[in-house]
Length: 359
Image (tube, rainbow, N blue to C red; front, side, top):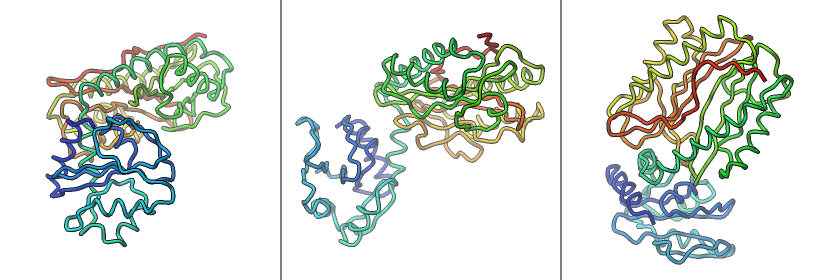
């Protein structure tokens, strides 16, 4: 068990007035134990209690190290495993559960009266996961470093007639060649008018002179995600394309310059949005400025006008303003930032100067 992370979750549980929690999200269990198990349809859970007596429930199908640091409760496919879980829970107290807990496990525990009440306690986990420790920070730096390498290696394949799908597939090969765990999400590649859709799925559209080339992609390393977007132009760039690009870059860089501990996350969104609005493109910036990232590409937490939190050291989130002109083109520029004690560290190093590719 990673005791510092367990302690953070227990503290957050205490702040919620809870003494116990049952966690079934495999990524959250990996976060707390360092052991990744994908149970598929089988039950897999970690029980935490303020008084100790933590237990992890694992099917006999799985192999786990002896020194996992928590009592293991093993069961077969035919054992009454939910009875074992109910026996571990204090029935006199409410039980926190995570937001991903499947109904096929939760409802039988409810019917058994395993706890006095059941409470969605994911904030206790989400807020702990939102503050990356030194090990997590190093893994995220390395994931972003390899993402920079991957998009750099993709450039020679950006040439007349290549399709969006072909570029996306090439990028997945590059990630494998760079020794990553895989992709954070399927790469998004969009040419010309397709880039005016914020999340265009790559199709057979082929690249031609004058198109923008928007690539939004990420890889994982050591279980942690990277995410970056760059927009290039193929062979030529119009005055309107140049104007939009420079406005988006200014918004990206201004928001990043404002990142520091204590800054309201909604203020970062306002800074970027005001720049784009002043340039006359406000209605075409159609999404929040950013999202938190870690074990998942979209971790809990966002950088938007509705955000209520302030940045704290250890947060990692995206800064990704965009302008999308339907029927014409779109531009998005995205970096990941790590909040430090005095400001932020931008995890991506790929240049953001307007770039014309002449492949």
